[in-house]
Image 1 (cartoon, rainbow, N blue to C red):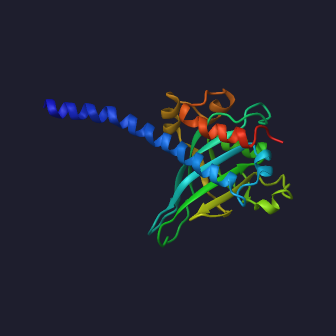
Image 2: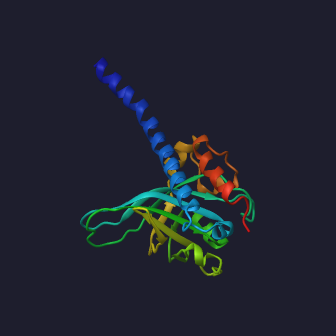
Image 3: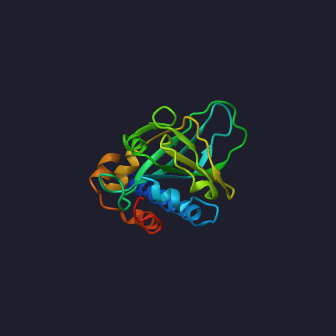
Length: 224
């Protein structure tokens, strides 16, 4: 009985630590993905990043292999500070992604996704904690670096990009759904907290999220 109680106690202690390590890993992987896509010559244009109000990063999103499947991933949202969302980048918010597509999926793939939220309307919808592309906010495949300077469409809320096997391009995510990952946010901040509270309440940046915030502050200190 003592051995059993000891095992239960060890498991109780280990589970929160394991959950925290998964959140930290998500932040680390998101930082690595964004670093690659912001520094490669044909990656995300600084011109567009300077116009963005928020950035969503989903590292290593996987597609269901067989049967009725979809694509599900966990990522990070970061928005600019200030009432007009034109200041430095704020604290990270944990988010989920679900394409909810139907049909037979042959094989499995791992894809990185990055989304630039370009309008206040799009930012408000994302920060509501639940968003469906197409229905709640308009989305389009992001232009490449050569076309970025010419982009100026106020009707597009979100620009989407993908990277798979080293190949980077604009991506269409159809009617993908995104939502706040409340459990992960609680693990990261040590208390229940929603997306709007993190952004508007100026929640302190967790140590594990600082490299990602520092990267964005370096690349794009203020919104143009």
